[in-house]
Length: 116
Image (tube, rainbow, N blue to C red; front, top):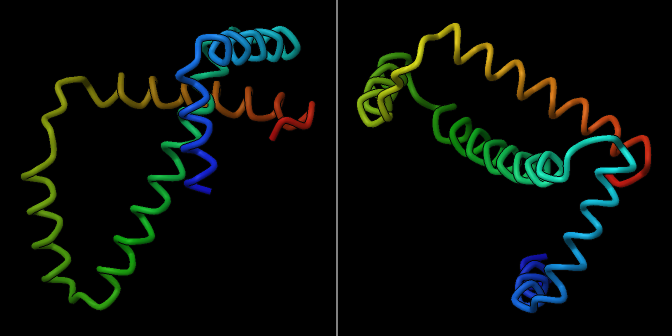
């Protein structure tokens, strides 16, 4: 699959390929009554979620044999290395809900027309 992705990336270096893909995205967006940038966002989110799933599986594999104390130490180390979040919890939850609803809405529409 990686080689297929590389081939597509090479094709995207050509202007006419970018335009053709852009036209396809616009047509798809019109068909499901969404904005083209939301379609692109959806596929970017799908890719991120696949990455998160892989990381979660790796984390579960690493931590399954750890004692509770070792898990706690690992959590503390990870928390220390995490970036600081300056927004309120309420705003973060609201934004997350909005994105999840948007993702599910677009996903349902794309499934209905057979794209995914």
